Image 1 (cartoon, rainbow, N blue to C red):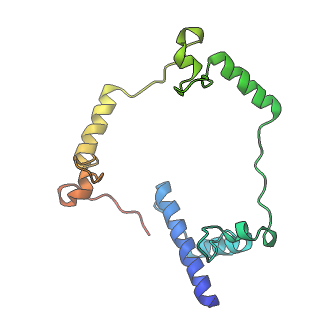
Image 2: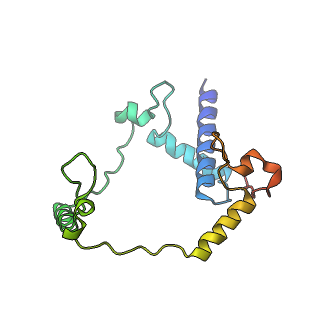
Image 3: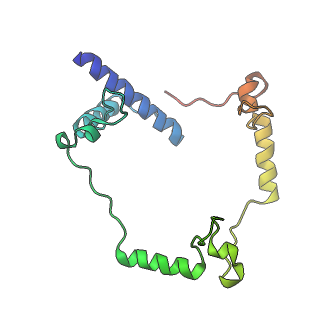
Length: 164
């Protein structure tokens, strides 16, 4: 039973680590020693899914058995008040109606204009479109939500795989 539980935990951590590596876009997988160290740390902190249907971790089910997580530093009263004053001056507060619009959207003449954010040039957009067309990174015109390179993988170059 204990071996099965440990193996399940190790598999879950390896899967989690692999998912994070893929999401981060870094092709370097964790070493065996790193995974073992992460497993030990997770066991000590209770950051392991409990063996039940709640979806909670052990440290959430049994908080007294594990060390407390450090509290996140919040904002001071002065910082919150300064943000409120800034929002009032800029009209960046939701209006008291059902539209969901902010005051500066309802009454733009009463508030200073926000500075324009520099966008991409036409050449950059065209280059991105051409690259997407060549790679098939465009959503197919159907209800599947898949991209062309997913529907027709033989028509497009293969994406480079990450190691692992």
